[in-house]
Image: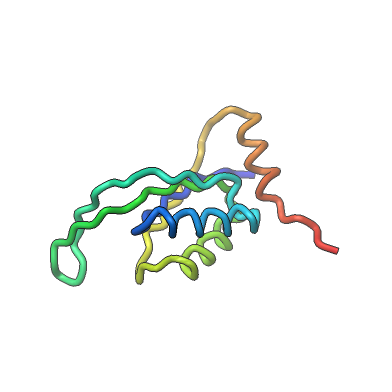
Length: 109
């Protein structure tokens, strides 16, 4: 089983926390860290823009990524949200196992 760190930026802390709770509750992410605010400078619709954003780091498995990405797109307020997944190539074995356990879909009766 592979593990990923998924980077997402968003325009508010409240929005980040709302998404975090939904993803962790759905077991799509074991952890969703919110850092910020930070300042982003970017080109959008032909103009140079600047905005305060919060950077989020989600920990998940490769098996859960597509569902996590779909949920992020549905929940995110941006037209084109930043969603970048980076493989975790090494790490503390117990932590990686924790990610695996916490992102295993629960059995519902």
